[in-house]
Amino acid sequence: MYALCAFIGLEADIIFRIFILIPGQTYKFFYGLSNEVLSLTWAASAFITPIQVGVAVLLSTFIPPVLVKILSFRGWFHFESDS
Image (cartoon, one colour):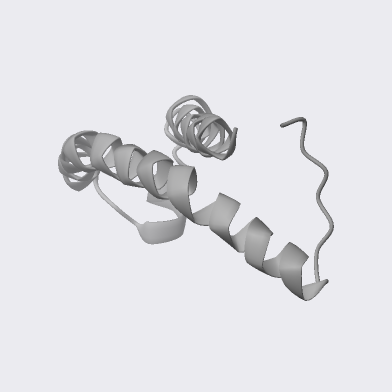
């Protein structure tokens, strides 16, 4: 479940950037990037983003369940699961 949430969150961020920030040219407004630099940046990001999503999904598969167990054991967090 944690991995699915990480995947959905990252994909929502990507979709937001593609459909809101690029057409609105906010990167040009905030950072003063030319169209050439912006296209090179997005081309490089096209290779990096799937790696980031994969790492996030992989890590969120293993780390959150361990943290929930540790925090629940110490009494700092209460979580009821279906399993």
